[in-house]
Each structure stands twice: as structure tokens, then as C-alpha cells.
Length: 475
Image 1 (spheres, rainbow, N blue to C red):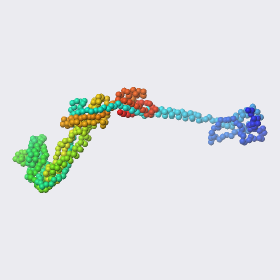
Image 2: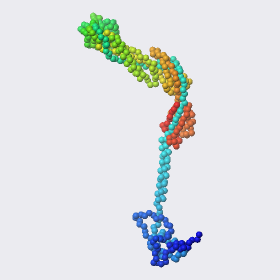
Image 3: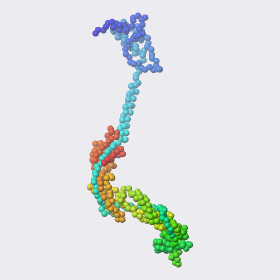
Image 4: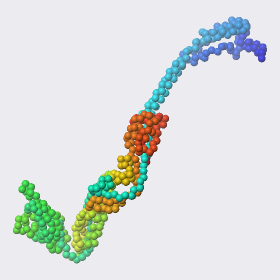
């Protein structure tokens, strides 16, 4: 479409100023100007310079009459005027070098962080290895022997004898009542200061107190000989219980000395003597509390029951680590039983003292496991028995004097193949190729299957340090 001549005229009228010098351009229509570079930001120290008048109105007044050539020349002159002395030249931008340096520094930091992350992952990275070992279950029903001196080193278990003893003493109350004529009694110590030969004192040997009262022993005793040290005799002694020759309280005495009247007139009279260890008590005539046989039996049962429980606990607590003591593989026997009174003695209370012995036959767990492995036709060096409650052991026969046990074991025995974990970890750490991991697992017969995971997961690197390899075992 051809341009509208009226519109063109109006446009030219807006551009060209009036020819009269007195005329002015309208304030609402600024002069057209060619696009110029953006002005630099204003600074407080550099105020914006005003455009000289000669470059505006004066130039406008001097432009030639309007035609295309003149109009082009005017635009060229106007552009030069506006980019000349009237406006400062555009400063060179300082942001491009700074932005370039910032990008370089930022990129270097990213590279360092990336390399540092790789290094940290290499140092702190871990490899988790889960290994499932080969296992087997075998039904067992066999007899075996435990001996202190085994005849068959492979099929007999070597036994160990464990022995303990303990003593308990308690006081009991007499429950009987009767008219009695009781004799005083007490314990004395008999000394031999005569020669180095032992001296037998028969039952009913008399002992005389300083006031002339006679006491007797009811059982024979042997006094050991004295010890000769550089020509000087050191007396040796033995203890015994003496009883008053007559009943009644007159024979009750505190601690005193005794002579043996039977040696009177011989050198032995001065060489043998006795001294009280306990007071002489119990002499009585009249109605009194007396010890009955039922009292003695109850006292014995009470002592044995309490002491037996304590001794069994001590016996089991004394079993060394790695050994086994079966419940029926020990016995408790009485070593000594003593009471301060006899049935019929006129006393209010009496003491009982009991000593028990315990003997148990032990065997090593490793010997028992070896027996089971051989019975299962496996190699003791290749497998280990997994201890479970599915296997029982019964004591068929026990002879503690001979030191033998006959046992029967029955149930399901669980076996697991042995894995040299240290060698496996070292082999994994020494190989730097993840493709070799499965080949390494196949080197170990004990491994049934294995699984490997890396942490962090994106870094598939085998740690050189075995402490960074976590090994998990299952059966």
C-alpha cells in the first residue's frame, strides 16, 4: 500500500523546526535522535554535564531546508553533536574482568570440592561383605567313655577330676527331759615332751586334775613323738575328749592342767601332760534337758542339706572354662561328723559340725566336639560344631574311684565349615579389581554364597585397609 501523503507531511512537520527564528519547538515533542549507548550510572562526585546550546537550537537553526539529502546530513550532524563534547564518552565496563575472575575462582572451588569428595570417599569408604557359610545337620546316637587315663585317644574323652570339701557348724537345742546323772566332759590337748617316739594311750586312760579329780578318755589315742632340734625336744600333741570319773556338778571345771597317774614313778610322768582346750561341763544330777537321738538325727539332716547345696554350687563354679560337668557326673560324701553331746547328755544346747567332700569328673568341650565330628564322617580341621540344645548327654554309669564315666549322646548335631576370616579380608584388600571378588570367594570352600555392598554406593572401590571391610557371617 502507498504511504499516506497527509501522514507523511505531518511527520515531517514534527521533525523539521519552523523557519522563523522566533519560533520554538513544542515542549512535548523532543527532537528525534539516533540510539546511543546507555549512559553510565550517576555518581555523586560527577554531576551530569549539560548539553551546550550551540549543539541544539543553534544547529537546528542552521540546518538547511528539508529534503532527503539535507535530512540525512542533519541526522548525521545531530548524532555527532550528541555523542561529542556535550556528553562524556561511555566508560569501559569493569564488570567483565571481575565476572571472569569470579567464574575462574568458582570453577576452581568446584574442582577442589569434587576432588576432595573423591579423596574423602576413598579414605572413609567402606565395603560390606556378607558371607553365608556351609553347614550340615547330622543325627547322633552314640555311647562314649570319659576316663582319667583313656585307652582310645580318638574315641575316649580325657577326664579331669575336680575335688572340693566344705565344713559347717551349727548350734542345736536339746528337746528331751529326764532325771539324769550326767558326767562332766571336755576336750584336752595331750603333749609328748618325753622322747621322739610316739606313745599309745589306751581307752580309759586316766587324767588327774590338780585337785585330785579323775577323768578318762573313752577311745585310745596316739601321742606323736617330740621333735629334736639341736638337742632340744619340742613337744608334739594330740587332742582327745575326757569324761569325769563320777557324775555331778563337782567335776565341772574351767581350763586346767592334767597329769597321767599311770606314769607315776617313771620318767614318763614328767614327760607327758595335758591341758584343757575347753572347760569341763555337763556334770549334773537331777531333772534336766537331755539330748535325744532324734535331736542328733535332725541336726545331722539339717547340716547335710544346707552344706550339700553350698558344696554343689561351689563345685559347679569351680569348673574351668572350656570344661563340662554333667549333673550326674559328681558325688557328695561325708568326711567327718561331730556333735558336742551324745544321746542322754544333760545339756540345754549342743553343737554339730559336718564336713562333706565333693568329687566330679570333667571333660573338655573340644574333645566332645571332635568325637561328634568324627562320628559324622567330617574332618575336625574343616568344621566346627555349633552348640545347640538339640543334643543331649546322659550318664549311664559312674565310677568315681576308677575315674570313669559311660555316657550316651543323642540328638541332632549342627556343624559349620571353618572360614579363615583374616585371610579372606587380606585377599579382598590386596586386590584392586572388583571383577576378581567372586574369584576370591571361590577360593574358600567354607563359603556357600556371598554378597558385597559399597558405601558410598556410587564408589565401587575396594578399601586397602582391612578395617574398612565389614565382614558379616551367617550359617
